[in-house]
Length: 192
Ligand SMILES: [Zn+2]
Image 1 (tube, helix red, strand yellow):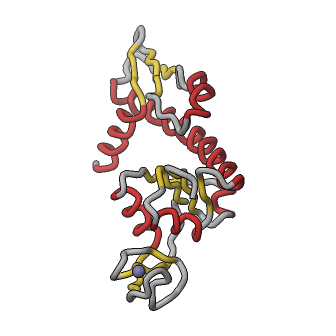
Image 2 (cartoon, helix red, strand yellow; image 1 turned 90 degrees about the vertical axis):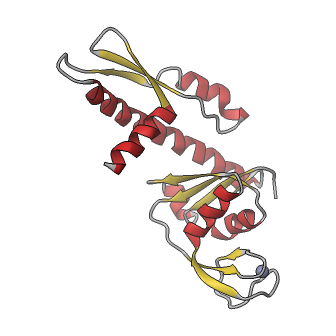
């Protein structure tokens, strides 16, 4: 039941469904620009995500479920291309980072605007009791201040920290390039 509610909320957040002449409904995606560069390209792609058609006996929730599948599909494609742009930016040394060490550093500096985490990723890490810095390297002492470090599940700690600092976190189901880079990447507020 909980899943139904969250998937419905997700649908409402991502899309607007308009019932056209029954039994057809049009699904429009809400705007969610990754950055200004992508804006024009995205605008064209997202004018209309698709049309969901159903048979006469189907209820609104049947149509909504079908729309939800469509939105998930389009959202996944969009996330994939947005993430590819982030990885390219990271490779150029711009306003993005990729890999565990670089992402952890960006998180510690509060520079992450949007974090991308591979769904299956679980990492051992440490959190400093004195300065709250996170680190992936095994170490009893914090690399930054020498304070005592305690073990944490690094992925969860990073996500919590990014959200607490006003950033966003996206869970990525499948992305080969992200996996190869260690499963973590981030779009930054400013270059580091
Ligand atoms: Zn410290």
